[in-house]
Image (cartoon, rainbow, N blue to C red; front, side, top):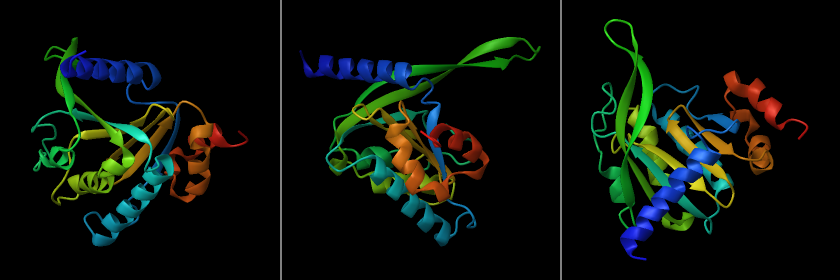
Length: 216
């Protein structure tokens, strides 16, 4: 099997795994954490708290010797009309020592045309997968870059980045400086995280999350 064939197979395997285990990059078993509140948007105290919390959560989920995949959805330079991805190559510079496999994919969403008819709209993106030991991945700088994106700071990361452990069936996503979500297939995979960082759980979702983990 050639390296190109191996790369294609790996992409297909991860795509299929996510579609089956975490459809829509989601699981009903999850914990959502608050990262930035109550500090002012753009303040040093907010960013310091964000980085401290998200690194603690990441390191609770993944150990240095774990093998994980970094899964990226890259919508291109015009992904966000408000912020824009001002340093689009920063993420890939951080990961340049890892082998990168990618393919063009499409998300299909429903919308309305000018006459109010329901239509399907395709959104193209690059599906990119890299793999390695946690110790080989500069996750702190990646997470910091994500925290910068809506803070107006550089370098920032505007791509959607997911950290995946197939051995643990855990998918972790920091969406921006506001929060992050850990998804799993089993309650036991996240129970320690739920207990240890319970004070950081997003209040709006607490009742839902408590129902998942309490008495289990």
